[in-house]
Length: 373
Image 1 (spheres, helix red, strand yellow):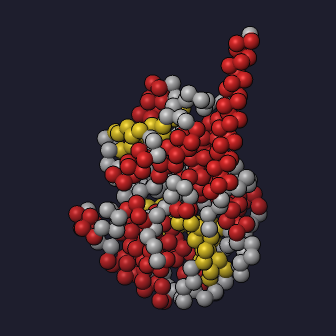
Image 2 (cartoon, rainbow, N blue to C red):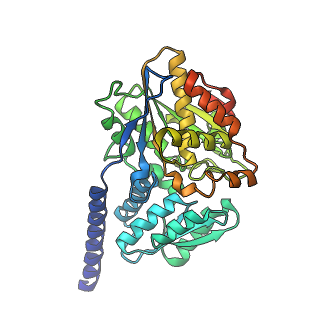
Image 3 (cartoon, rainbow, N blue to C red):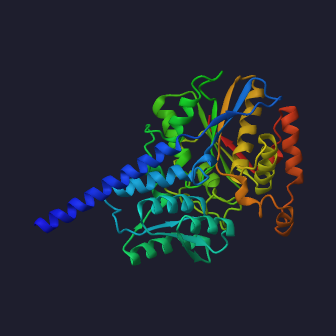
């Protein structure tokens, strides 16, 4: 009995130390910056970008990884010897590997074999081990199998993202946005724009808006090869897409459990050419590179801003910079790579540049658009 009590006490002590270590890391990191981007065509609409690329692991997924691991620790699923496993195409795994190393735990990322070398290197640099599958849709089952074989814990971002994050507050992304907006000209945004990866971030934002009774709408721009848009407009939780997303970090081949469709006010279907072109244009405006998922967000920002301008509505629009474009120097920012993929972004880029001058949205930048009344 004494031995059992000692073991339990040691486990509890590890849990306390682990949580303290993660809290200390959060205090060192601080919050990400929110900054405005004035555009001459939108004098009455203020545009803001929350820079999630400033986190220690360089992306929005840093918040998610922390929440998922804390969720596992506080539910007694993660202990001092637990191997952590995730199904991820890159950024989430990078962040989870960071926290696993912080806690002295082994981490395994199950990735599609098509994952870019830069993402693999980033995971390995954080001490993670990469485990590959040929079919992107096989990552879920393989991650579950690997975790079981290791006696470890499958973090399962696609199921637990929405429940691991406290959408009511506790410094989640939504609370941070609205607190940072309090002294701005239009402190309550008319729109928040967030593309879906797991769906967890849009779920957190949408729930927080409803919880606080805010006069804010949520627009979710979905990439070309993803199931979320079709699932949302058709109210179909079983919607699927027959190929993987061309925009890293967002878009899924199925409706994920973390995506909460009923908190979404509008969805856009954005072709990959527009997402990549928008990331190039936004990078020029900001003076630094952003990823293509941020380009998808920027298309949503322009859509919302043009809609407000047409309706004579003054206000603000907020979105996120999901990660840095430096991760994509050999892909989205490489003209030769785009040519090999037969991706021509020039027409979309010209349309986006025109919007900046006219303030009129070009529907040719979308494959679909749907808005709830």
